[in-house]
Length: 410
Ligand SMILES: [Zn+2]
Image 1 (cartoon, rainbow, N blue to C red):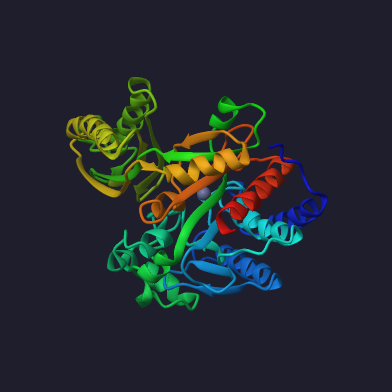
Image 2 (cartoon, rainbow, N blue to C red):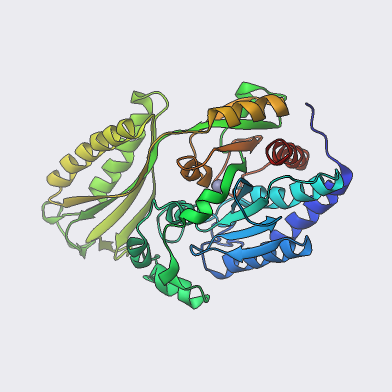
Protein backbone atom coordinates (compact mmCIF):
# COMPACT_ATOMS: atom_id res chain seq x y z
CA UNK A 1 0.00 0.00 0.00
CA UNK A 2 1.29 3.45 -0.86
CA UNK A 3 0.40 6.01 1.76
CA UNK A 4 -0.18 9.54 0.52
CA UNK A 5 -1.14 12.61 2.51
CA UNK A 6 -4.89 13.35 2.71
CA UNK A 7 -5.15 17.19 2.64
CA UNK A 8 -7.51 17.55 5.64
CA UNK A 9 -5.21 15.50 7.84
CA UNK A 10 -2.29 17.58 6.64
CA UNK A 11 -3.85 20.83 7.96
CA UNK A 12 -4.79 19.24 11.27
CA UNK A 13 -1.31 17.74 11.65
CA UNK A 14 0.42 21.05 10.99
CA UNK A 15 -1.76 22.91 13.46
CA UNK A 16 -1.31 20.27 16.19
CA UNK A 17 2.42 20.35 15.63
CA UNK A 18 2.47 24.15 15.74
CA UNK A 19 0.52 24.14 19.02
CA UNK A 20 3.06 21.82 20.66
CA UNK A 21 6.13 23.48 19.13
CA UNK A 22 6.52 26.06 21.90
CA UNK A 23 5.78 23.80 24.89
CA UNK A 24 8.81 22.87 26.99
CA UNK A 25 11.52 24.30 24.75
CA UNK A 26 14.94 23.87 26.32
CA UNK A 27 16.89 26.99 25.46
CA UNK A 28 20.09 25.73 27.05
CA UNK A 29 20.28 22.26 25.49
CA UNK A 30 18.15 22.92 22.43
CA UNK A 31 15.08 20.80 21.64
CA UNK A 32 12.59 20.02 24.39
CA UNK A 33 12.70 19.11 28.06
CA UNK A 34 9.33 17.83 29.20
CA UNK A 35 9.35 15.74 32.35
CA UNK A 36 6.51 14.19 34.26
CA UNK A 37 4.50 16.68 36.33
CA UNK A 38 6.63 19.68 35.33
CA UNK A 39 5.04 22.74 33.70
CA UNK A 40 5.73 21.55 30.16
CA UNK A 41 4.37 18.07 30.84
CA UNK A 42 1.24 19.50 32.43
CA UNK A 43 0.72 21.78 29.39
CA UNK A 44 1.13 18.79 27.06
CA UNK A 45 -1.34 16.79 29.12
CA UNK A 46 -3.86 19.64 29.09
CA UNK A 47 -3.45 19.95 25.36
CA UNK A 48 -4.17 16.25 24.87
CA UNK A 49 -7.20 16.32 27.15
CA UNK A 50 -8.60 19.33 25.30
CA UNK A 51 -8.01 17.67 21.91
CA UNK A 52 -9.73 14.50 23.09
CA UNK A 53 -12.66 16.50 24.49
CA UNK A 54 -12.98 18.38 21.20
CA UNK A 55 -13.44 14.98 19.55
CA UNK A 56 -16.06 13.92 22.08
CA UNK A 57 -13.79 11.32 23.68
CA UNK A 58 -14.17 10.69 27.42
CA UNK A 59 -10.87 11.22 29.20
CA UNK A 60 -9.68 9.96 32.56
CA UNK A 61 -6.38 9.87 34.42
CA UNK A 62 -5.70 6.39 35.78
CA UNK A 63 -4.25 5.62 39.20
CA UNK A 64 -0.71 5.87 37.77
CA UNK A 65 -1.03 9.23 36.05
CA UNK A 66 -1.57 7.84 32.53
CA UNK A 67 -4.26 9.67 30.53
CA UNK A 68 -6.89 7.66 28.62
CA UNK A 69 -9.35 8.95 26.05
CA UNK A 70 -12.12 6.59 25.04
CA UNK A 71 -14.06 6.26 21.82
CA UNK A 72 -16.85 3.98 22.99
CA UNK A 73 -17.51 2.57 26.43
CA UNK A 74 -14.41 1.30 28.26
CA UNK A 75 -14.57 -2.48 28.29
CA UNK A 76 -12.91 -5.74 27.40
CA UNK A 77 -11.20 -6.19 24.04
CA UNK A 78 -10.31 -2.50 23.82
CA UNK A 79 -8.00 -1.54 20.99
CA UNK A 80 -5.48 0.88 22.46
CA UNK A 81 -3.05 3.21 20.76
CA UNK A 82 -0.95 6.12 21.99
CA UNK A 83 2.52 6.90 23.28
CA UNK A 84 4.00 9.45 25.68
CA UNK A 85 4.27 13.22 26.00
CA UNK A 86 7.46 13.52 28.05
CA UNK A 87 10.96 13.83 26.57
CA UNK A 88 14.56 13.20 27.45
CA UNK A 89 16.45 16.38 28.50
CA UNK A 90 16.94 18.34 25.28
CA UNK A 91 15.02 15.78 23.24
CA UNK A 92 13.45 16.02 19.80
CA UNK A 93 9.91 17.02 18.94
CA UNK A 94 8.75 13.65 17.63
CA UNK A 95 9.71 11.00 20.19
CA UNK A 96 6.42 10.42 21.99
CA UNK A 97 4.24 13.30 20.78
CA UNK A 98 4.16 11.90 17.23
CA UNK A 99 2.37 8.79 18.52
CA UNK A 100 -0.06 10.86 20.57
CA UNK A 101 -0.85 13.35 17.79
CA UNK A 102 -1.17 10.47 15.32
CA UNK A 103 -3.61 8.65 17.60
CA UNK A 104 -5.90 11.71 17.65
CA UNK A 105 -5.66 12.22 13.89
CA UNK A 106 -6.17 8.51 13.22
CA UNK A 107 -9.52 8.83 15.04
CA UNK A 108 -10.39 11.78 12.76
CA UNK A 109 -9.40 9.69 9.76
CA UNK A 110 -11.58 6.76 10.88
CA UNK A 111 -14.55 9.11 11.32
CA UNK A 112 -13.98 10.63 7.88
CA UNK A 113 -14.06 7.09 6.53
CA UNK A 114 -17.32 6.46 8.42
CA UNK A 115 -15.79 3.61 10.36
CA UNK A 116 -17.94 2.33 13.24
CA UNK A 117 -15.70 0.37 15.62
CA UNK A 118 -17.11 -2.89 16.96
CA UNK A 119 -14.74 -2.62 19.94
CA UNK A 120 -13.90 0.29 22.23
CA UNK A 121 -10.86 2.29 21.07
CA UNK A 122 -8.69 4.08 23.62
CA UNK A 123 -5.91 6.62 23.20
CA UNK A 124 -3.35 6.61 25.98
CA UNK A 125 -0.54 8.95 27.08
CA UNK A 126 1.80 7.07 29.39
CA UNK A 127 3.51 9.04 32.16
CA UNK A 128 7.33 9.47 32.30
CA UNK A 129 8.24 7.08 29.48
CA UNK A 130 11.76 8.44 29.20
CA UNK A 131 12.58 8.34 32.89
CA UNK A 132 13.94 11.86 32.34
CA UNK A 133 12.92 13.13 35.77
CA UNK A 134 12.93 10.16 38.15
CA UNK A 135 15.31 7.83 36.30
CA UNK A 136 12.91 4.93 35.77
CA UNK A 137 11.82 4.63 32.12
CA UNK A 138 8.24 3.57 31.28
CA UNK A 139 7.20 4.56 34.78
CA UNK A 140 3.46 4.76 34.05
CA UNK A 141 3.22 1.49 32.11
CA UNK A 142 5.47 -0.33 34.60
CA UNK A 143 3.30 0.74 37.52
CA UNK A 144 0.12 -0.20 35.66
CA UNK A 145 1.35 -3.70 34.84
CA UNK A 146 2.82 -4.29 38.30
CA UNK A 147 6.41 -4.13 37.05
CA UNK A 148 7.46 -1.28 39.35
CA UNK A 149 7.12 -1.23 43.11
CA UNK A 150 4.89 1.75 44.07
CA UNK A 151 6.70 2.28 47.37
CA UNK A 152 10.03 2.48 45.52
CA UNK A 153 8.55 4.86 42.92
CA UNK A 154 7.11 7.22 45.56
CA UNK A 155 10.59 7.58 47.00
CA UNK A 156 12.40 8.19 43.69
CA UNK A 157 13.69 11.74 43.49
CA UNK A 158 14.53 14.12 40.67
CA UNK A 159 17.81 16.06 40.28
CA UNK A 160 16.36 18.80 42.53
CA UNK A 161 15.79 16.21 45.29
CA UNK A 162 12.00 16.41 44.87
CA UNK A 163 10.44 12.99 45.43
CA UNK A 164 7.93 11.48 43.01
CA UNK A 165 5.32 11.69 45.76
CA UNK A 166 5.94 15.42 46.31
CA UNK A 167 6.08 16.17 42.58
CA UNK A 168 2.75 14.38 42.14
CA UNK A 169 1.10 16.23 45.03
CA UNK A 170 2.28 19.58 43.68
CA UNK A 171 0.16 19.08 40.56
CA UNK A 172 -2.78 17.66 42.48
CA UNK A 173 -2.14 13.99 41.72
CA UNK A 174 -2.49 11.61 44.67
CA UNK A 175 0.68 9.47 44.82
CA UNK A 176 -0.87 7.00 47.25
CA UNK A 177 -2.99 5.53 44.43
CA UNK A 178 -0.10 4.33 42.24
CA UNK A 179 0.34 0.62 41.68
CA UNK A 180 -0.88 -2.36 39.63
CA UNK A 181 -4.09 -1.80 37.67
CA UNK A 182 -5.05 -5.35 36.62
CA UNK A 183 -8.63 -4.47 35.63
CA UNK A 184 -7.40 -1.85 33.20
CA UNK A 185 -4.75 -4.15 31.76
CA UNK A 186 -7.40 -6.87 31.35
CA UNK A 187 -9.48 -4.51 29.19
CA UNK A 188 -6.74 -4.12 26.60
CA UNK A 189 -7.31 -6.44 23.64
CA UNK A 190 -4.40 -5.06 21.62
CA UNK A 191 -1.93 -2.18 21.91
CA UNK A 192 -0.32 -0.47 18.94
CA UNK A 193 2.16 2.34 19.60
CA UNK A 194 3.15 4.58 16.72
CA UNK A 195 6.61 6.11 17.12
CA UNK A 196 9.24 7.95 15.14
CA UNK A 197 12.01 5.54 14.24
CA UNK A 198 15.12 6.13 16.33
CA UNK A 199 17.64 4.65 13.96
CA UNK A 200 17.86 3.85 10.27
CA UNK A 201 16.79 0.22 10.10
CA UNK A 202 13.66 1.11 8.13
CA UNK A 203 15.81 2.68 5.43
CA UNK A 204 17.88 -0.51 5.34
CA UNK A 205 14.74 -2.69 5.13
CA UNK A 206 13.12 -0.68 2.33
CA UNK A 207 14.42 2.73 1.20
CA UNK A 208 10.97 3.58 -0.22
CA UNK A 209 8.90 2.73 2.86
CA UNK A 210 7.70 5.53 5.16
CA UNK A 211 6.26 3.18 7.77
CA UNK A 212 7.21 -0.19 9.29
CA UNK A 213 5.80 -2.58 11.87
CA UNK A 214 8.02 -3.43 14.87
CA UNK A 215 9.07 -7.00 15.66
CA UNK A 216 11.12 -6.76 18.85
CA UNK A 217 13.03 -4.58 21.32
CA UNK A 218 16.58 -5.42 22.34
CA UNK A 219 17.24 -5.94 26.06
CA UNK A 220 18.26 -2.69 27.74
CA UNK A 221 19.10 -1.36 31.15
CA UNK A 222 20.49 1.53 33.14
CA UNK A 223 23.18 1.47 35.77
CA UNK A 224 24.47 4.17 38.09
CA UNK A 225 28.09 3.88 39.12
CA UNK A 226 28.92 5.91 42.20
CA UNK A 227 32.65 6.57 42.40
CA UNK A 228 33.87 8.07 45.64
CA UNK A 229 37.29 9.64 46.14
CA UNK A 230 38.46 12.62 48.14
CA UNK A 231 37.41 16.19 47.48
CA UNK A 232 40.41 18.52 47.42
CA UNK A 233 42.03 21.64 45.96
CA UNK A 234 42.72 21.51 42.22
CA UNK A 235 45.77 23.75 42.54
CA UNK A 236 47.57 22.46 45.60
CA UNK A 237 46.99 18.70 45.66
CA UNK A 238 50.04 16.73 44.53
CA UNK A 239 49.44 13.90 42.01
CA UNK A 240 50.31 11.28 44.62
CA UNK A 241 47.77 12.74 47.05
CA UNK A 242 44.86 12.74 44.60
CA UNK A 243 41.91 10.39 44.81
CA UNK A 244 39.97 11.82 41.89
CA UNK A 245 36.80 9.88 41.06
CA UNK A 246 36.64 11.54 37.62
CA UNK A 247 39.59 9.34 36.57
CA UNK A 248 37.73 5.99 36.92
CA UNK A 249 34.66 7.78 35.50
CA UNK A 250 36.71 8.50 32.38
CA UNK A 251 37.74 4.84 32.32
CA UNK A 252 34.05 3.92 32.47
CA UNK A 253 33.30 6.04 29.40
CA UNK A 254 36.12 4.41 27.44
CA UNK A 255 35.25 0.89 28.61
CA UNK A 256 31.66 1.41 27.50
CA UNK A 257 32.82 2.58 24.11
CA UNK A 258 35.23 -0.37 23.70
CA UNK A 259 32.38 -2.89 23.98
CA UNK A 260 30.84 -1.48 20.79
CA UNK A 261 33.75 -2.72 18.75
CA UNK A 262 34.03 -6.01 20.65
CA UNK A 263 30.39 -7.15 20.37
CA UNK A 264 28.32 -6.81 17.22
CA UNK A 265 25.00 -5.12 17.94
CA UNK A 266 25.99 -4.06 21.47
CA UNK A 267 25.69 -0.44 22.62
CA UNK A 268 26.87 1.03 25.91
CA UNK A 269 26.75 4.76 26.60
CA UNK A 270 27.55 7.07 29.49
CA UNK A 271 25.52 10.19 28.75
CA UNK A 272 25.34 11.62 32.23
CA UNK A 273 28.05 12.41 34.79
CA UNK A 274 27.27 14.18 38.03
CA UNK A 275 30.39 15.18 39.94
CA UNK A 276 30.00 16.42 43.50
CA UNK A 277 30.49 19.29 44.16
CA UNK A 278 31.10 20.08 40.48
CA UNK A 279 33.51 23.01 40.73
CA UNK A 280 36.16 23.86 38.14
CA UNK A 281 38.91 24.32 40.74
CA UNK A 282 37.81 21.37 42.86
CA UNK A 283 38.80 17.71 42.70
CA UNK A 284 35.42 16.01 42.96
CA UNK A 285 34.71 14.02 46.10
CA UNK A 286 32.38 11.71 44.22
CA UNK A 287 30.75 11.27 40.84
CA UNK A 288 27.70 9.42 39.61
CA UNK A 289 28.14 7.98 36.10
CA UNK A 290 24.89 6.82 34.52
CA UNK A 291 25.27 4.07 31.93
CA UNK A 292 22.80 2.80 29.36
CA UNK A 293 23.51 -0.67 27.90
CA UNK A 294 21.56 -2.64 25.26
CA UNK A 295 22.56 -5.99 23.88
CA UNK A 296 20.70 -9.18 22.87
CA UNK A 297 18.81 -10.70 25.82
CA UNK A 298 19.00 -9.47 29.44
CA UNK A 299 21.77 -11.94 30.34
CA UNK A 300 23.93 -10.66 27.45
CA UNK A 301 23.37 -7.07 28.57
CA UNK A 302 24.21 -7.90 32.20
CA UNK A 303 27.39 -9.75 31.16
CA UNK A 304 28.50 -6.74 29.16
CA UNK A 305 27.93 -4.49 32.18
CA UNK A 306 30.00 -6.84 34.36
CA UNK A 307 32.85 -6.48 31.91
CA UNK A 308 32.68 -2.68 31.91
CA UNK A 309 32.37 -2.57 35.71
CA UNK A 310 35.47 -4.75 36.11
CA UNK A 311 37.50 -2.27 34.07
CA UNK A 312 36.16 0.66 36.10
CA UNK A 313 36.84 -1.11 39.40
CA UNK A 314 40.46 -1.67 38.40
CA UNK A 315 40.93 2.02 37.59
CA UNK A 316 39.09 3.04 40.79
CA UNK A 317 41.47 0.95 42.90
CA UNK A 318 44.50 2.49 41.20
CA UNK A 319 43.14 5.95 42.02
CA UNK A 320 42.25 5.02 45.61
CA UNK A 321 38.54 5.43 44.95
CA UNK A 322 35.60 3.16 45.74
CA UNK A 323 32.91 2.02 43.34
CA UNK A 324 29.29 1.12 44.11
CA UNK A 325 27.11 -0.02 41.20
CA UNK A 326 23.33 0.41 41.34
CA UNK A 327 21.16 -1.28 38.73
CA UNK A 328 18.40 1.23 38.05
CA UNK A 329 16.54 -0.91 35.51
CA UNK A 330 16.94 -3.93 33.26
CA UNK A 331 14.35 -4.92 30.70
CA UNK A 332 14.69 -8.17 28.83
CA UNK A 333 14.43 -8.49 25.09
CA UNK A 334 10.78 -8.12 24.06
CA UNK A 335 9.23 -9.90 21.13
CA UNK A 336 6.08 -8.14 19.95
CA UNK A 337 3.05 -10.36 19.44
CA UNK A 338 4.01 -12.33 16.30
CA UNK A 339 0.45 -12.80 14.98
CA UNK A 340 -0.45 -9.13 15.51
CA UNK A 341 2.82 -7.97 13.97
CA UNK A 342 2.56 -10.16 10.89
CA UNK A 343 -1.16 -9.44 10.41
CA UNK A 344 -0.55 -5.71 10.46
CA UNK A 345 2.54 -5.92 8.25
CA UNK A 346 0.58 -7.82 5.62
CA UNK A 347 -2.57 -5.66 5.91
CA UNK A 348 -0.52 -2.45 5.68
CA UNK A 349 1.96 -3.90 3.16
CA UNK A 350 4.94 -2.46 5.04
CA UNK A 351 8.26 -3.96 6.17
CA UNK A 352 9.01 -5.21 9.69
CA UNK A 353 11.99 -4.00 11.74
CA UNK A 354 13.40 -4.48 15.27
CA UNK A 355 14.44 -1.59 17.51
CA UNK A 356 17.10 -0.91 20.13
CA UNK A 357 14.92 1.67 21.90
CA UNK A 358 12.66 0.98 24.88
CA UNK A 359 8.94 1.78 24.69
CA UNK A 360 5.76 1.41 26.72
CA UNK A 361 4.69 -1.13 24.08
CA UNK A 362 7.60 -3.27 25.26
CA UNK A 363 6.26 -3.21 28.82
CA UNK A 364 2.69 -3.94 27.74
CA UNK A 365 3.85 -6.76 25.44
CA UNK A 366 4.42 -8.88 28.53
CA UNK A 367 0.69 -8.76 29.35
CA UNK A 368 -1.28 -7.98 26.19
CA UNK A 369 -0.80 -8.45 22.43
CA UNK A 370 1.29 -5.42 21.48
CA UNK A 371 3.20 -4.10 18.54
CA UNK A 372 4.49 -0.83 17.10
CA UNK A 373 4.41 1.25 13.96
CA UNK A 374 7.56 3.19 13.11
CA UNK A 375 7.65 6.32 10.98
CA UNK A 376 10.78 6.94 8.94
CA UNK A 377 13.44 9.23 10.40
CA UNK A 378 15.77 10.35 7.58
CA UNK A 379 18.89 10.82 9.70
CA UNK A 380 18.08 8.31 12.44
CA UNK A 381 18.88 11.00 15.04
CA UNK A 382 16.76 10.77 18.17
CA UNK A 383 16.92 11.91 21.81
CA UNK A 384 18.46 15.07 20.35
CA UNK A 385 17.12 18.30 18.84
CA UNK A 386 17.96 17.06 15.32
CA UNK A 387 15.30 14.33 15.48
CA UNK A 388 13.08 14.66 12.42
CA UNK A 389 10.37 13.09 10.31
CA UNK A 390 8.97 14.55 7.11
CA UNK A 391 5.35 15.69 7.33
CA UNK A 392 4.39 13.41 4.41
CA UNK A 393 5.81 10.45 6.34
CA UNK A 394 3.95 11.48 9.51
CA UNK A 395 0.73 11.63 7.48
CA UNK A 396 1.50 8.19 6.07
CA UNK A 397 1.92 7.01 9.66
CA UNK A 398 -1.49 8.41 10.62
CA UNK A 399 -3.11 6.63 7.70
CA UNK A 400 -1.31 3.40 8.55
CA UNK A 401 -2.43 3.71 12.17
CA UNK A 402 -6.03 4.28 11.03
CA UNK A 403 -5.76 1.14 8.90
CA UNK A 404 -4.31 -0.80 11.85
CA UNK A 405 -7.15 0.33 14.14
CA UNK A 406 -9.65 -0.67 11.44
CA UNK A 407 -8.11 -4.15 11.27
CA UNK A 408 -8.22 -4.55 15.04
CA UNK A 409 -11.50 -2.87 16.01
CA UNK A 410 -13.81 -4.08 13.26
ZN1 LIG B 1 9.48 7.41 22.88
